[in-house]
Image 1 (cartoon, helix red, strand yellow):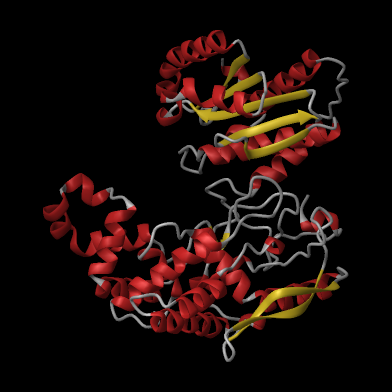
Image 2 (spheres, one colour):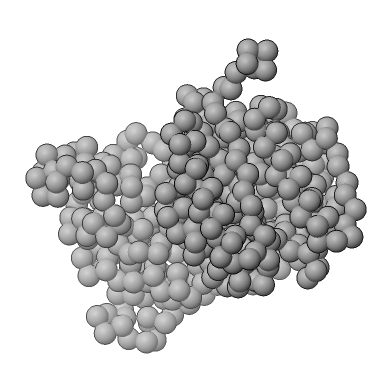
Length: 475
């Protein structure tokens, strides 16, 4: 359910604030560069506050020195622990809006990145996001979580102003790590006034300006490498070869950043000159938001209830949900939500969100729990559906062209089923074109072999998600 739905706010579409889902994180992140280039309202001075925080962390790491003196090193790690700000309802979690955030492991990675920067004489980069360029394990969620923690009081103030305008009641609640005090190098508790998330556990909701949201920071390793390639393509081709120069792994990007920090600074100046852009919520090229509105309407127009008495009834429900999704994509215009305007298919994750949008509503109506991307002990499976311990099943939804997954088919889903003691599994395969269809016969054979070898109830269904399918009258 959306924030606006729960609180009865009529949305016009031109609101400056993002309307979050309260029950599931949206895969968008707060980009500090967008804040830097457009400070307004409670966010005036935000970039300076971010810089001051990381200046403090850099100084502690520098004092720790090459031997990493425990007093300073451990203190740096402590202040760098920035867990997910669940109140923003952003990012990626297995279920709901509570993720791991930058716990001890990520704090150590950030400290290690700062350490490398200090060794190269970098005492405090203007944009702290450059830490992504010096150490593995630092991604968009880590950067966004850091911003959310350091600027928590600003997001709370912004939320309070929006709620006052639209008439949403707020409550006061304490936040232990609410604001960082640079003078004494400590996190301090603050009181925030914000509305409550009825689907969380004593959790408030913070709103974020649309202007600050992106699927990844403007300053990221891939963009840095793209800049380097544009500026010195011939040199990189000579050094690495044509194909490697264009498609490198993060190890090479990190090596480039550490050996040539001048290129990092040049990239930052270039980005400041051209500017960053927030995610286009209207076009939604990655399928991050529109799926909810479309599937909500479809389910409202097509209500269904089921009566479960046996495991067969439960599996029939699952198969009916899969068939409903297939019909929605193929015959009800759902294909449009998993393609961009130019006809190019969106990601596997976009297809999974669309499926979740259809199935979640029906599951709720029939007292079925559905958990997306749940970890069952051997890694994350796409969906787990259950009613108590009696009725359980796993669903893997994959693109036909996902060669990596299908190559390991005989190991993956059976291991998930075994780990969670589930005997029923379903493969939902999305095919976008003829090339995808040509792969299917071999995939069918593999699925059948797995079912025979394991004795589990494993079947498959194919969704023909072709771009602009011909109307029934022309078939």
